[in-house]
Image (tube, rainbow, N blue to C red; front, top):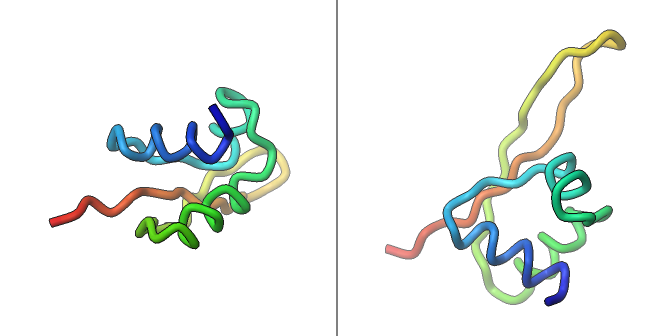
Length: 70
């Protein structure tokens, strides 16, 4: 199964995904590229910005979700 297929399967299960999750749990280093590929294939994927704070300050990151067809 390709990285793109694994990301799509994860999203189709109703899950959100961030780059950190993709790296740690799926071994996918370039999630934005996989999301771009899926969007080019016609999948409607939305993104929102998440925030966390660590000892270096505030960190922002994208969280992706597949829009469910109505």
